[in-house]
Image (cartoon, rainbow, N blue to C red; front, side):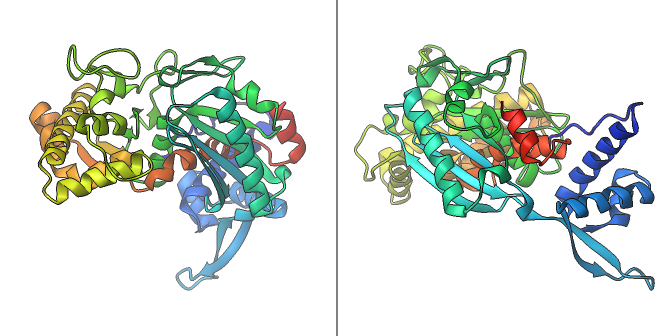
Length: 410
């Protein structure tokens, strides 16, 4: 289920009504394209005349294009409509533990350019991250030959809690970030509209919009990389809690008095199933230049019969399954989706064992109503989900004009 707020039907001016109709049609067309005017009318409940009027305006603006025709049971062929993918662009940024990834997408969410900047896992200084993001913005625009005036906005997924207010502040305890004014720091180097959210939540948006979460109203999307986080979806909406810190699943306690976590507490789930922790528990040198290649080597060693590697992975499946059982018992989701680069690597080998451990630690009925599956969008899902932040604003009625975008950026 895509997360969005359908414009409320309210009394207002003709302009209000037309804006609401435009938004309803854009949402429907965006996810169901190509489709006909008749199908849009049926899907949205708008009259054929209202649909025709709004679609005519969208075609005149160049936002919607005709895409052929289909037969209509003996009548005149019906014209198919689609979004004009080249009418605007969005950028998604993934600030991860091991890299900063910047991707440029068209309106069909097809990647047009990418820039990757590896990070030293021991160095996540704010200045370093800001420099990498700004360099990536310049690089993807240049590589794709896109002018900044054609960009609807930039979504940034970051570790930690994102406090939305008069000033966006990031609290990233494992990064050593406390109340970092990331938007203001980025604003010194770009005037593009900025949207900042937690990286696990942006990955969750991507899977709910385009991936394994589509169609679900109640789900949990789990991000497992060096660290661990989650997005909780209830009634089709992201549950954020009172200060937007809901979903810090990695810092729930899996063992009282257990291993020390990077957050400073002991026994956190992240201290057992995060990639950094899994490799530390193995405690032996592995080939590879980074955590991703080292974890892949650990999986290969276990497949080859190496006893200690197999033991560590068996324990990891147990801890992870028990952590998922907590989510099942607490939130009663239809679906649990494992993502993040480490979650996908571990899940490809360990998913049956993870499911079995979750079954043994869950209430039987709740477990029977929950599916546990892998994400479908790969490790790029954080950046893709971040790019949906400006897309959502656009579908809800924001203007595409460069003048309006500049005003919203200021």
